[in-house]
Length: 204
Image 1 (cartoon, rainbow, N blue to C red):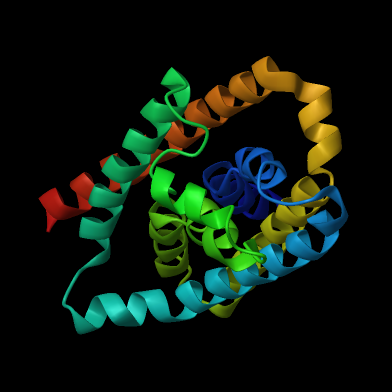
Image 2 (tube, helix red, strand yellow):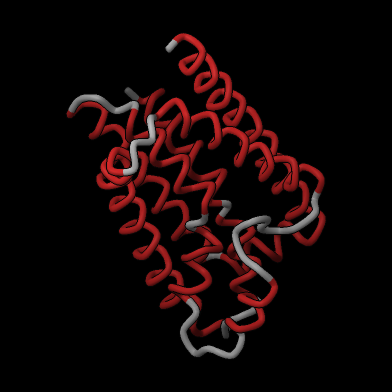
């Protein structure tokens, strides 16, 4: 059970990439606002994860999309994200645009948009939580995934709340190294999704 929770949590947290989000947050909010912004952003991410967890599969069925197809294309999406992270192209590739980042600086409250969505909760996270949810066939598996969502959300909050300390401790080079290591983990997860999806489609 612990092994399964850890796998789901690592899958989510590496793609959520709260360290990169924390670095972005520091450039958008005052130090005195970090606590409130962290709480609101984390709550938004938690609710978004739960909604996608319970309704994502239903939406796919409405459009007639099977899970192997989602796993295959999801693996491709995650692989692109992983390659960008490993190459150090952007702090949060595919999760936010330059226009969204600039617009955020003009808003008093950026906790929900763009910090929670789409910087933290982007397309890669949506794909991942749907795949993890669909492989959870019974109540036991659902409880494990819920625990992983809760744990991942807790890690997001702690990271955002201590953004100033983490950024100072890691520095620019530390943030780059951490992002690239996360990219490697996401790449490994992407291959698991991609191979599993292609194999299921081939056999069907």
